Image: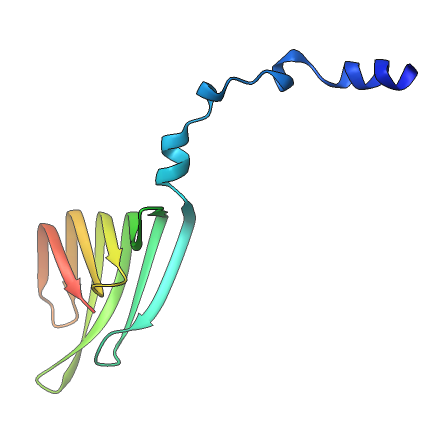
Length: 128
């Protein structure tokens, strides 16, 4: 009897009767995998290095090949005319498509090239 009284006092109506409508299933299904302050490094098809950083990143359950990112920055190296050229980039958001092997930069995209060139655009796709 004493055990029943103690156990009853530990459980409240709020714990036992949490309505299922209070759970945001859309958020759970949409954002299966989340990252904060993530960094990814790899090499492109030519073996040249690239680095990607993001404030937040997430994968969707139905589309695991794409990582959606916010506040993206990074760099990549390309060989052009026998010379290694470095590209530093920033963007408001981006999508890293692992299957298509590309990075789509979206919103306020700025690319600074080691030869002094600069590119400012709303959207750009980088093939890896």
